[in-house]
Image (cartoon, rainbow, N blue to C red; front, top):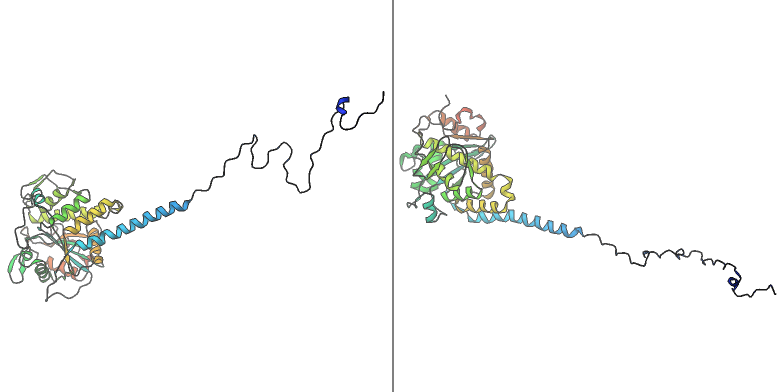
Amino acid sequence: MSDQRPEGGYGWLYGEDQPTRSTPTRAGSDLPPPNLPPPGRRVGGAEPPAPRKPRKKRGIGRVLGFLLLAWIVFLVAVPVWAWGQIEKVDASPASGRPATQPGTTYLLVGSDSRRGLTEAEQKELTTGGDSGGRGRTDTIMLLHTGSGPSLLMSLPRDSIVDIPGYGRTKINAAYAFGGPKLLVQTIEENTGIRVDDYIEVGFGGLVKVVDSLGGVQICPKERLKDKDSGLDVQKGCQTADGKTALAYSRNRHTYATQDIQRVQSQREVLGSIAAKAKSPWTVVNPLRYLSVAKGASGSLQIGDDVGPISLFRFALALSAAMGGEGLSCTVPLRDFAVTWDPERAPKMFDYIKKDRTDQIGSLCTKDGLPKP
C-alpha cells in the first residue's frame, strides 16, 4: 500500500490533529483579542446604559436667586407702601421756639382718635365714638436720642402747665385747644426742650400693631377690672391681645396713684411692642411683617417734616430706651397730684437740652417721685 497521503487537509482521516490556526495580527491594529467582546459591548451582546448627564446646578441657583431678589423687593416695597399711608400734619409752631439742640427729641403722642376703627370696633374696644373736635391725648412722652443713652420720659396728661393763650390747666388740653402745633408749643415753653419730630398714634394703631405681633406681655401686680377702659386681667405676667393692651394703657381708675401708674403701664406696653417688633421673626414672617406695617401706618400721624430715616431712628431709639440700654422715666414730680418738681424737673430738662442723658442718674424714676 502506498504511504502517500492525499494533500488538501484530509489528515484527520488518518487520526492526525488539525493544525492550530493562529489569529492574524497586524502591527498597530486595535482589533480585540480572540473570544473577547468589542469595547463598549457587554458579554452576551447587551448594550451598556447610556452615560448620565450631570445634573444642571445652574437651574437651582437661578431659582434661589430669584426668590432672594423677590424677598428683598418685598422687604423694601412694604415700608415704601406703608409710608404712603401715613398722614402728615403740621406740628411746628410758627415762632418763639428754642434754638437747635444737640441730639434729637421726638414727641410721642397717643391720642384718643378713633381713626381707623369701625363703629363695631369702637364698641368692642370700649372706646366710645369720637366726641368731635380734635380729641385729647392719653399719652404724652418725650424720646431723646443722642450721644448718651436714649431716654423716654412720660409727661402725665393731668400735669398742670401754662398753655399759651389759655392759661394754666392740664397739659392734654393743649391738644384739644390747638392740635399738635399748640401741644408742641406748650411742651417747648414749659420745658425749654426743642421738639424735633412729632409722632402720633391713635387707638386703632395700637390695637392692630399688638394683634399683628401676636400679642405683647404685660405684668400687672394685682387683678385689674375697670369698666371705663374695659380692662379685666388677672395678676401676673401674661400675653395681652390688642384690645387688652389698649385697655391696660388707658386704665387709671383702679390705681390709687391714678395717672402716675397709668404712664408706667403705657411705657410697659411700648416696651413689649418694641421687643416683639425688633425680633427677627417679624422680618422672616411675611404675614407679620405686612400686618405690622399696615396696622402702624393706618393710624399714624407724623409731622410733615419727619422723613423715613428719622422715623426709623425713632423706632431704634424707642427700642433702646425700653430694652435696658436706655432710660425710662416719668417727669420729676413733687407729689401724687402730678405737680412737676420745681428743682428736679428743670435739672432733667437741662440734661436733655444739652444731650447729657448719661448724667441724669437718680433724677430718672419710674413714677417721677424722688427715691427715698
